[in-house]
Amino acid sequence: MKDQRIRAYLDAQKSEHGRPWVLAFPVLYPREVLTALDVNVREVWSDASGGLVTDPGKLQGYLCPTVRGIQAVLGRAQHGASVAIVPHTCDSMQGLGMIARATPEWGVRVITFRHPRGTDRPAARQFLRRELEAFIADLQDALGRTLEPSKLAQAIDLHRKVERALANVLAHRAQLAMSDADLYAVLRSIEWMHPSDLLAELGKIEAQIEPGAPRRPGVGVVMSGMTPEPEGLFETLQDVGAYVAGDDYAAIGRRIPADEGPMDGDPIGAVVERLLLMPPCPTRASDSSRRIARLRQLAQDTGARGVVLHTVKFCEPELFDVPIVRRALEQSGLKVLHLETELEPRVTGQIATRLEAFVEMLGNGRSA
Image (cartoon, rainbow, N blue to C red; front, top):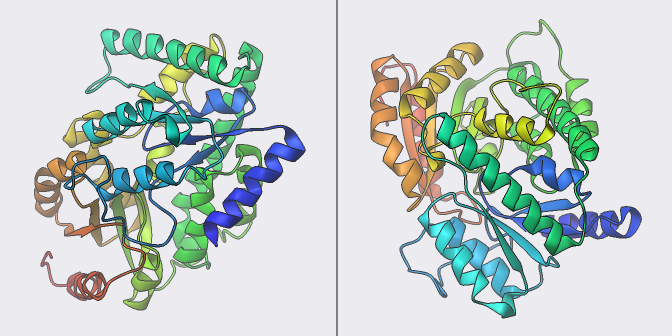
């Protein structure tokens, strides 16, 4: 049903506004460029057909369910897009991009986007600018459209407004009466909704914030990982007496730059700066100490009593981070649950039991 609703929206955008759509895979790519080209994006974080993808297809069987799910979507060739953006998130995603290029029956032209690894430095900025220019050239060729600098500047401004609204909603989560399930149904529309429409939806949520209102009942936790799945995760949290106080999901909270970057001048340079200002993420080999500091600050700012490190099975970038992040958070007094899922179609009994046990022990200094 959700996939049908998204497809109906994209079809309407194309017929009413002349906006085609492209597929985009996790995690980081310059969304402002697509907006400036008047193109919609349909991000694919999992297979939305409703089943757990177990067939490895052209991939090794031990790869993460995110990559397997994306392959399943491409293999059905019913996505309606002619272009797929493949960021160099990990070796598995890069490998999928190479397979897609060699599989014409999938019907997509693959455009890659590589971001520098590690810390910000002059060489990283030079690399990122060259990569961005190549990305723009490939998109213009594939879509038959020309990027105008003024349009890019307008797109950057629109995305800044979306990011401000998103940051405001996340910062005031405890003053919102709506459930996590209802809130994230709107927040995840960032994966497919045009930013102008998304800004309007976020504005409706901002209007519900009650400044000075007491914190919502329940135990606040920080969620950190790739994507908030499986379906029913938030209902399960609510059932066990918890809610998401702080968000560090790559699909949501990690989209907000540390600051807005340069407000005028070269728009290409502004996009480069904004990409470098994104929060730490293991898919870009960010220093784990920066992620630890971010999670500590999120917990402090939101009053969260614990952190859930929510990893997708076989997601090597996230899994490499878990031991050092968990140890550092526990040493600072936070309680930590490492929850590994396979993007199942629904919450399993095991997931529900572990979440319930974690919430119960948040007051006695233990970790799960």
